[in-house]
Structure formats: C-alpha cells, structure tokens
Length: 446
Ligand code: 9PG
Image (cartoon, rainbow, N blue to C red):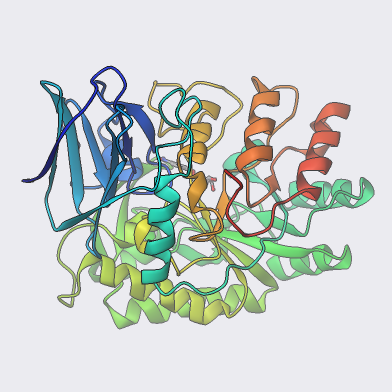
C-alpha cells in the first residue's frame, strides 16, 4: 500500500464510502471511526469479498472506489483506479483520514455532499450525489452504449432453491398466467443442471428444457435460465475431463470445492460458446450468469493476460453466443463489468430472514440485500439496470413490507420469487404492482 492522501475531518461526522468487489460484497457509507463488514467464515473472502485481498483489521478497503466525506461541509473526495481495480484503504487516525492504495488512484471532488438517509450518507446533508457524477465519468470512459429496459421476471430460487423441479416451474407458469401477473420471463434458477460446470446435461428433476420453454412460450412468456459459466465443481465431469482448464480456489458450496475457469484458453471460450449457443437454441433469451468472480480469480493462466483481461474475454464470448438476449450479471466483479451486461445484481442475496444467519452482511439476508442496493443506487441507469434481487413477499418473509419498499424505491430490474400459491392478497397485490411499475433505465431521481 502506498500513501495517497491525508484529509483533516470532523471525526464525529466524517463518513467513508466503501465499494465492494463483487455483487455480494457489502457496499455503503459508514462512520469514519468504524470498520466495514468483514467475512465471518474464511471461504467467504473468496466467494463474497475479494479473493486474495483481505481488508485490514480496522477501517475500510474499497475495491476500485472509495469516497471520503470530511463531515465539515467540505467536498466529498472520490478515489478510484484504473482497469486493474486497486484496493483503496482508509482509516481515521488523530482527526485525519489516511488513504492508501496498492495501485494508481485518481481523486475527484464531488459537486456536493453525500445524500442523507440511513446507511446512505451523513445525517442532515443534502445536494447532488458525488458518486453519481463519478459514475457518469466512469461510464463515459468505458464507452457505454444505451441501456436497454429490463423485462420483468419470475425466478425459481427463493422458494425452491436447488430442489426445483420441472413440475414446480409449470405450476408457477400456470399460476402466473391465471393471475395475469405482468411477468415477461420465467427464469429457471440453480437446480436444472446435472453439476456446476456440466451445463449440457440435466439434473434428474428436469426432463426436457425445450419442452419447458415451448410450454412457457405457449403462455406468451419468454424463458430465462441461470448458469454459473466460469465456476466448476469438483464433482463435475468437466473437472475430471479438463483439469488443465481449471484455475484458483473459488470457494466451497453445494458440498464441494469450487474452481474457476481459465478464460485465456481458447478451448474454454469455445466450450462456453457451445453451452450458450445450445441454450439459446433451446428457447432461452434471458441469461442470469452467476458466480462470475470465478473468471477473475488471481493467479497465473495459460496466456499472460491479466485476470481482468481474461474475465472480459469470457464475458465477450458469452455475449457473442447469446446475441441480443438479455444478460444479467450476478456474483460479478462490479467495475470490470460495466459495458458488458444489461442488468447487474448489486447486492447480496435476499432471504426470508431479515438478519444474516452468521452476522455477515454478504450472506443471504434482507439486511444485506438492502444495504448494497441502497449503496449502489447511483449505478442504475449509468452502468446498467440495477437488480436489487427478487421481490419476496409471502407471509413467511420477515419484515416483508420493508423489502417491498426497498424494491419499490431502488429496484431497476423487477423480478419476483415466491411460489405464487403461497401469496396472500397483500403479497399478490404488491407483486403485481411492483412488476407493473418498473422504472425506466435512467438514473433514479435524487
Ligand atoms: C443459486 C443462487 C441464486 C442467487 C445467487 C447465488 O455459497 N455462497 O457463497 C453463495 C453465494 C450466493 C449464492 C449462493 C451461494 O446465491 O445470488 O440469486 O441464483 O446463487 O445457487
């Protein structure tokens, strides 16, 4: 880490904005005297924070972006780095915020002070959001084209999880149709595939994807599918057949160790083209691509391309294969994905429980999902359409009205994920209303 700046602040009012590496990494404004969320269990550093870049014990570490509001009425200073996304640290020492970084960083000052609201900025402040101004410049530098409006979707994950069956999908297609819910896309999530990495074969709970997409099309809807294209499970056939395609440690989930793919290997990008071309031909034109961090793991690859050059090549191969299908990123390095996806998950997973089970705000919980949805609100309409994660409003969801309010205010992409039959009248009305009122792909009013 090299020193970058030293700012005298009002220690009681100063705030620091820490931008996390990927979709699930907590992202918010914090009191400068505090410490940001940390992984509670070791594998979480890789899976939900930044692999190989643990934050210091105290203070803050933004990945490619950090901002300091001195709390004395002075301008907000926004620190950001280039293509390799430096880690930028800040800590409060004797009335000064010390900023350091492990790569080149530039500083801009915002036109105003950070917006107010819980977790958003200092109480009582008002004015233009300096992060919005920074994001306008970043998008321009990334050569961003126009942002397409997102379709509305129903997603199988937050009720069925990995146990989802073809019959479950059809039950909900039918219920959505009968209730005339304004759902454009039926999105099949994790559980359809035979293994993580084996995207050409089905789990025992699905019989035929082409029959399923045809049934969905019969109701006038489109089909969407979840794939974790850069992730490989130890149990998969792909891991057995192509050990030379694998890189790094991508964590542990589904009771198995996980690796990433070497996206600098042309055989790997050819394989990805085959997978996505096949899914497109099966009738899908909406792709939720997940665990994308696994394509950008640190470490050596076949060619000497950097991890983020490799990541970009993998993303481009997918885009080529799916044409103008809708592309939603998830578990994705945020800043390196600008210009590569239509929509982006900007938060940790939502969950029927309000608080994360282990206290880690990168883990499934309404609190974690709301934190970064608010903390990245300015990215909507500038980088892509923000996906705050699915609306869930069945009676079993704790503090469901609060989650519906977050989606109403900060949700760009509107998707729902309850079993429709479980909804009571309030849940069904709220789902219908929020799906029908998706905002345009332009920045939220501040
Ligand atoms: C499917 C899910 C859903 C969800 C995604 C993603 O082990 N983990 O750290 C872990 C993190 C996130 C996660 C699952 C596991 O959720 O965000 O919407 O698609 O994958 O498995």
